[in-house]
Amino acid sequence: MAADLVNRNVAAIVTSGSVPPALAAKAATSTIPIVFHTGADPVATGLVDSLNRPGGNVTGVSFLTVASASKRLGLLRDLAPAATVIGLLVNPTDPGAETAIKELEALARSQGLTLHVVRANSEREIDDAFTTLAQRAVGALLVNTEPFFRTRMNQIVALAARHAMADMYPGRDYAVSGGLMGYGASGLLPLENPPAPWRGCCGPKFSRLTNGCAWSRCRLSPTPDTRSHSSGAT
Image (cartoon, rainbow, N blue to C red):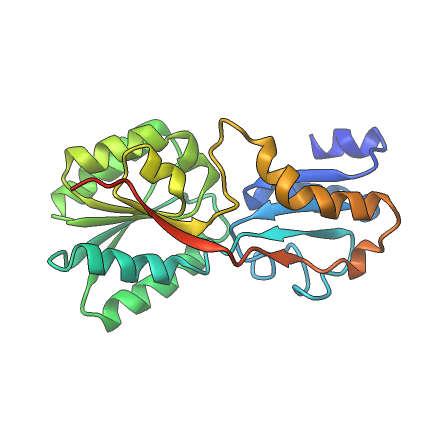
């Protein structure tokens, strides 16, 4: 798809959510401006050289949801202090997953917690992941930042409730859907209205690029407005 857009000589390419589409666009062109928004670390995943000077033809918005994973673990510990065995659900295709795993494993060890990592990239694999977590007597669950998981939000929330796991998510939409709590950037909105994050965050940057801004100097924008949201469940 990225190659097709390049062949069409579009003015700019906008990618939403996960890192792979942005990396595919970056691989396809070094001249067409690319604007992304993601929860992953854009430097660690190879999207840009730095936040202040992205370099090349790529810039965008980072929601810092991966960077706030340690805060979510802390909040989960406060919510479920009796849970010493924590589950972490990640998507194995997510370039930022291994970084999140390493950081959370180190933090869990420092707090005397056991972290069990399960990986899923399909509806069936999510079911299997929860079966594994239940067998390991996991009492609380962290769901890593991942656009695919948002498409399976109701499934994940229902499985966490079925297995009586205190659940913490990377955004308020999970809490609205019945999850215990979400903590993340307030700019991340539910998928039923996908253009909204682009209009609110990427839109102004896209406008600057298409009106003469040198994109190699167009500073990448972090979204620091990070909030917690509870479903009110007891």
